[in-house]
Image (cartoon, rainbow, N blue to C red; front, side):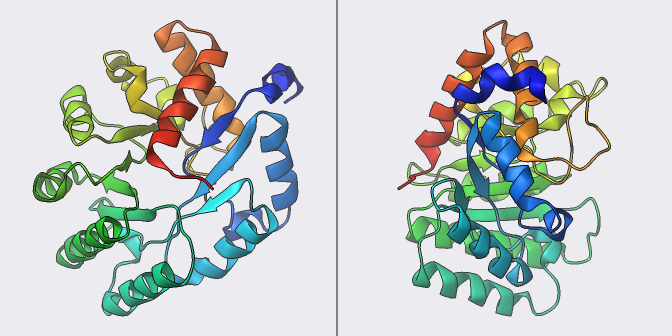
Length: 265
């Protein structure tokens, strides 16, 4: 990635990266070094479930000024007995500093079996976020109607966050933004036939933040490979093309947008 060396003096923030997962066990330090070299100096780490808390916190401990943990129960981890998982999340919030609740939401793509439980878990974690004045990261795969129904009742001036991996239409984008939320834009915007670029160009860049969702959804030209935080630069390049602004401006604006949501110490 030597072609991106000039970007190493910028400040990008990857608002969604799972580099604590086993996919990075063999080269995690090298992955983080590449991110730093390419200007990604802050990486936000949404949790998955109780099995990922230890590696998540280990990564924060090693890079306390760069890696910022969130705590939450991912919707695809909501199964029978999910209440015990929620209890673990709530206990951790009381034990240490986290920078948000996530990732949470509803996923009806893989399995609709636990739809009712996913809704309950989502609502519970929104309430937890409000109680602790923390932002939320919303996972909304094939579930915008359900998500919006809940948010219509829950959204207020005290609730902030990001619609993660946003890939909806302009109406859905405007609805998400109406709650005071940002749209998390990742590799999908670089996919030739996604149509997301046509949606994004109709939105003010002040409503966007950058994310990778590593190790998933790698952007072009890395599509199909393991994603990593350094690939934010490809997403930023696409955003700069859409809005016809310098990539330096993309870094500045999207990082500012992110800092409006998260309170970094």
